[in-house]
Amino acid sequence: MDAPYAKLDELEPGIARVLAHNPSAFTYYGTQTYLIGTSEVALIDPGPDSPEHLDALNKAVGNRPVAAIMCTHTHRDHSPAAAPLAARFGAPIVGCAALALETVGPRADASFDRDYTPGRVLGDGEALEVDGDPVVAVATPGHTSNHLCFSWRGALFSGDHVMGWSTTVVVPPDGDMAEYMASLDKLRQREDRVYYPAHGPAVNNPQQYVRHLVGHRMQRERQILSLVAGRPRTIPHIVANAYPSLDPRLTAAAGGSVLAHLIDLERRGLVERRDGGWTAV
Ligand SMILES: [Zn+2]
Image 1: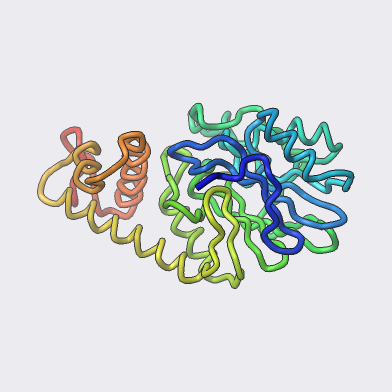
Image 2: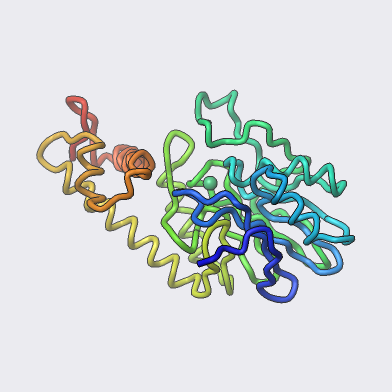
């Protein structure tokens, strides 16, 4: 596929996207920045701070007023363009909180944008009006502790919480499997008609897709429990057995997801740490 970098791609009336040129094992073809609104717009997940992407967004916005620059979370493929775009358009940065680094210790690694500074943080259920309709924040911690989805006119901008091409990476200490599962359950109780994720195609069957994701994680959990039954096992051993045909670039992320499952199972009293590994209780 020829990915349509730096082009405005209209998805439905009032919703368009521009794909940033930052493909990787974690971003698929790149980050999709969404423009919502017609006479007035907001940008969701501004993406990386690259000249090509900023110029494409500038062209896509044209002369229209920008109500807000909105970020679902602060991974470096999502939020670094927020500040330059806010300056260019005279628009506020509204959405997720910055990561609370000082109170919780070393949660943030190099994948986090430490410069992100929101003008207004939206709590769960809080909204901002864009082009006459509310954009409502849906708190969805798990992938990161500060993750929000945004709902507007029946569409849910799902960031990295639910993606159209891959399961979501959940890496401790900031990523939390129990929170991620609770956030999936929260979406399962909603009636969004479509999801527009930051990476990968739109999800046109949200309810069914979220049920599939929950089933996938529960299957992974059962698999990990059976691998640690009887004797302690290390995370590399679990990864090698649970992900047999894994892309080597994703080994560390898979280890993170296994750790996230083990921490959750430990809290529930189902596994414990012993002899340098993990084992079922
Ligand atoms: Zn992310």
